[in-house]
Length: 420
Image (cartoon, rainbow, N blue to C red):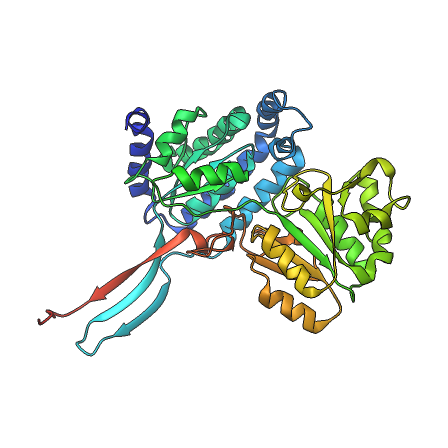
C-alpha cells in the first residue's frame, strides 16, 4: 500500500531498535526512566511553551482542551509517575508455569515483551511520556501517532526522551513519533508485520475507526459512559462527596461521572445530593421526576429537562444526566443499555445490593461506595497506564506493565522425537 511505503522507514527503524532493547538490564532501564523524569522537569519551560502553541489553536470550550493542557504541576506528576514505573518490579522473564512431561520434556511458559506497540491518541501529550515509560520498562518498542491538536507538544516531549536515550548510547527509535498527518494513520493501520498490537486512546469516534479499519490487531480502550447509582439505603454524605468527586475532579477524563441514577425512594434527598455540583457550575439534565424535585432547589440556569440522547452520552464537560428508577432491576437494565463497560458505582448500605451490583454489572471496574475517579493505573498500583481496556480479550481495565507482556513456551529435551 502506498501510504505504508511512504512511512516504511519509521517502521523499519522501530524493528531495528527492538533488537537493541531486548536484554537491557533492569539497572539501565531504571536509569533511563529516572533521567527522562528529571529531563521533563528541567525542560518544563520549553514543554509548556510548545504546549501553549497547541492550546492557542484550540477553543478553550472544547472538551479536549483540558486533556491537551500541560501545567508545571502536571509535568511534575508525569515525572513522578515515571519514577514510580522505574521502581516497579520487572514483569519480564517470569516463569508463569512449568512441568515435566512423562517423556522427559521440560515445558515452561515465561513472560516476554509484545514487541512493537502502536498507540494512536488525540490531544493527550501526557500519553507520549506514559507510553514510552511503560513500553520501555517492558522491553517493547513504541510507535506513537498523536493528533495534530498536540503536534508541538508531542514533538517537544519526544525530543526530551530521545536526548536521554542518546545520552545512554541507546537507539532513540525505541520510541518513534509518526508525523501528525492523516496519511500516517492509514500507514499505521496497515503496518502488518511491523506493529504487533495497536492501542487507541481517545474519543469513541477514534476507537470505532481503529477497530473498523486497522489490519493490525487492536486492544480496544473504550470511551467511558459512567454511572453512579444512589441506592435507597445510600449514605447521603458519602453519596454527595462521591458524586461531586466523580463528576468534577477532571471532567475530560474517561472515568468522569456522566449519569447519576437515583432510587425513587430517595428523591427527597436529591437536592442535597447534587448541591455541591452547583459550586462548579455543573449543568444537570434530569428526567421528569428528578427535574420536578430539583426545580427551585438547584440553580435554574443549570437545570434542564433530559432528552433520551442525554442518557448514554459521555459528556467530557461540566454536564451530567439524572435518571430515576423504581427498582434495583431498573438500575441494572439502564446500565446495560447505556453504559460502555468502563466504570460503574453504587452508593449503598445494603450488603446484598452491593454484592449483586458487583456480580451483575458488566464493566471493567465496578465500585461500591467509592468514586469512579480511581479507575486509573496509578491508583490501582500499576504505575502509569497505557489505557483502560473495555474489552475482554488479553486485558481489561487499567493496562499497566503486566498487560504489555505476552508469553512464550520454552521446551527442553534430551533427544526426544514424537512417534506417529
